[in-house]
Length: 559
Image 1 (cartoon, rainbow, N blue to C red):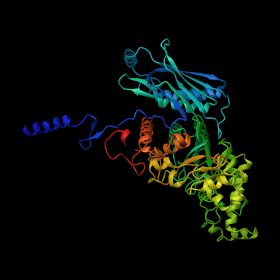
Image 2 (cartoon, rainbow, N blue to C red; image 1 turned 180 degrees about the vertical axis):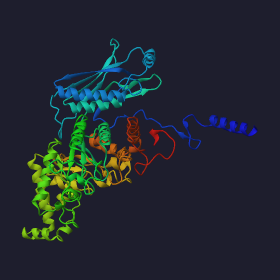
Image 3 (spheres, rainbow, N blue to C red; image 1 turned 120 degrees about the vertical axis):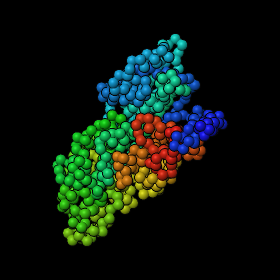
């Protein structure tokens, strides 16, 4: 009895001595410090181009209504309407509106007994164009206004004005981040009103690459990733569908190609691909497919062995046979029906041609055409470009093609940097467009790259001429799949991808690289927690190694 009294006395003393700014850590009986929120920061991610705010708090009606105006046609109204319903479920998660199934009626009565009217009851969206085509460079600008409530007004409204439906989508995302749930009043509130936001992206191309060859990703997982991309205002999903390990995609004109899938259950039908493209479009995201040739293509020969130079030389593909290019052209013909985006990725990286010279019929073909194996590589890449261009696609190639034969590439070629810094400056100096993906900072499978290194990376580094800067169309973070599958892919992508997303969206001058621990880190911590609340398994921000679990108990906003 005396021992229990002593334990009780010590416990009481601890509660008295320890400050209230600490919380219990249930795993160790130690208290962890509460996170500090700097109210001077703007907790929007990515940061808008221009904005002003005030000091009022407005309540938002859980029965928020949508009004669509402007010259936007039925397509725009449909895309906006669907987005509004999606975001209502996110914004009013706790207050009952927008959720599947009705909440208990007494909850609504309770809320209405606390607050008799709401400050914001309508979201008015004006779209000035009826063109809902989604292509590179589509206007994504918008103006968002949260007006101050007037004394003679029963309720206010939030307005979003955009030239295209895709600008409206970006504005709805920003609006959703302005809204937060107050657990005391049990209402959704907008702080720091009134808001006036004029926003537009810094770069036209803001991409995330997804590799479904090294590990198959179910359709539901790809859709979850697309949803999460829209939260950070990414606008291109680079779908690296096939590679040497597996060929999971259905190609009706060459039905044996997907014999190269891991199993018959790890495949994508034509209908699956259509679904992914349409799902992405509804979120303002283009899908750029990649068929990587002539290397990284061993899986093709599982269904069609004649594509291999020999049983012991399985890649690069056989450059000497017309059949190889017939199959390639057939694949692109089928994919052109599915992927409307103007860019198509042809790969061209990491091509080792040694076994061509050791395969008699390929060696003979090279000699007959007075070509070296390096020349054969060039021949294959240029032939692939011709085929893509004939199908009204703009070719994108990994940087090795530019490094090897820049003067031979089609002038429309977009050079995709990955090996390191300094390539985009060389490419744009020769008049090519460029995508920045320096593996040292923007390869997400490199788990030892912390968030701040991702954030500090600059696509225009080393490019000072304004006309050349415009040739850098943007950048892309790459999620190679050797060590990522459904079990860990989201926490590998997020939150580091968000650091690149802000670099690609927000003005360079408003996102400085200095003092980011105090100016940027709190905002990224907040965005990571927003992702978690929306069901995205974003890993802790502060860990040096990505996708690690938390070290112990604590707030999401501190990890």
